Amino acid sequence: MLLVAATAPSRPLPLVVGRSRGRGAPPGIRTAKPEALTELQLRSSSPTLSCACSPSPSSSPSPGDGGKGSARNLFDDFSVLSPVVPWEADDIWRIYAGYFFVLHIPLSFGGLGVVAKVLKCSSLDPLTTVISTVLLQLVELSLALALLQYVAMPGNDVQAFFASKVSTRNWVKETVIGFAVLMILVWITSILADKLVGSEDAYDPVLEGILSDSPTSKLVCFFLYCVIAPLSEETIYRGFLLTALSSSMKWRDAVVMSSLAFTVAHLSGESSIQLFVIGCITGLTYCRTGTLVASFAIHSLYNAVTMYMALAS
Image (cartoon, rainbow, N blue to C red; front, top):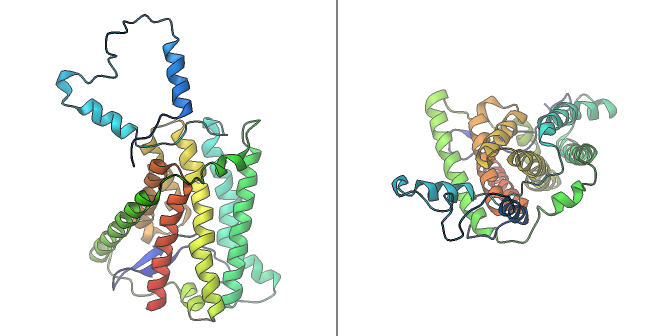
């Protein structure tokens, strides 16, 4: 469900959740990871002879590189994500395609229509709409986790894998920085979009209907957009897709690829640039901290600000 609310007087911004449609609803220095130490030990046990008093070519920058080698190594060490994941690298995109076409599209874009048919009504009232969307999101997340466990390599516990992504390591600083950068970039892209394609004055009618309904509808709506939707999307797009891709490619390429998938999943052309920016910022924060708590917090805060602005309007 992609609902929009404005951060500038003229242009609404995307609320980052999966949209439902249907008849019924219109930094610091970190120690090396265990996996990295294992790789170093394996390298050191190779039969290649070397002099212990001679510096390794890879550890000392060449005199003529101007420090570029050190800068490159520092950039490569930005991500703390482990290369060990429960899925085969060659299966990542097939797994995601299965989730996208079998679960995400039917549930997020057709679920409310099914609810309307079951209830035998032509349209759903705001409270029924938002409660049904919460349930559909929870079903989608549960089935997605079941799918990820089913396709995982033997002996891997996906639940334990995701539990390891929810840590108490220091993530507050990165989260604050990431959220501030995100809001600035979204504001800039909104201004540019106004100048290039014109302003958008209307909010999403579904969101307007829910926020103008009872206090219960508003409360459930905030719970959906600030808890359920960020939890679901961060689990899939950062916890699974970004982590899995970074095990077989450079982490920055994985951030871009997962952000593109995140953008396409919302099927919102007018908000695609902003969605891509949101995916990149949450992805960068996740790579740096190694915990989904950081990306979830940014995602949730962004949606909360957007919801508040929509309510205040």
